[in-house]
Image (cartoon, rainbow, N blue to C red; front, top):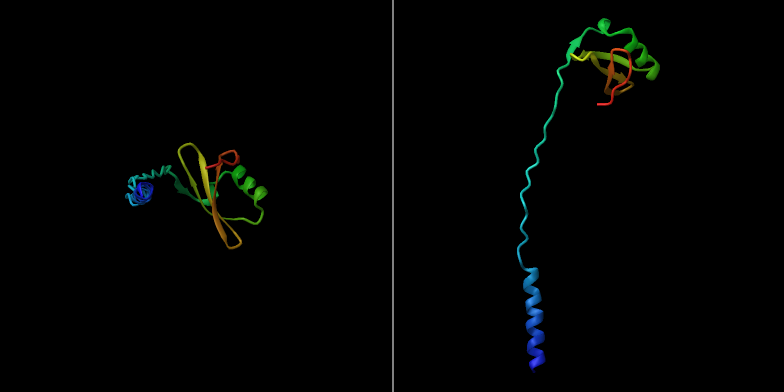
Length: 98
């Protein structure tokens, strides 16, 4: 009888450990967007080296808009077929990963 009572106490005690509330730690996620200052330039003002690099890398690309920042890095908005995207290059036509 003693073993039965002890067994019952152990079983009932183990159920109470599953009933404890789970505390969720509220974590705040802060996103910081760093936006460089690009100003729009006319397509004619884009250096020839950048245009040639674009034509060589993406022959079917259409240059929609161009932007430049104070470091003379160019952001090129292009369209290839029905897809749009942006590329980054320096003034000598070398591609930049951003």
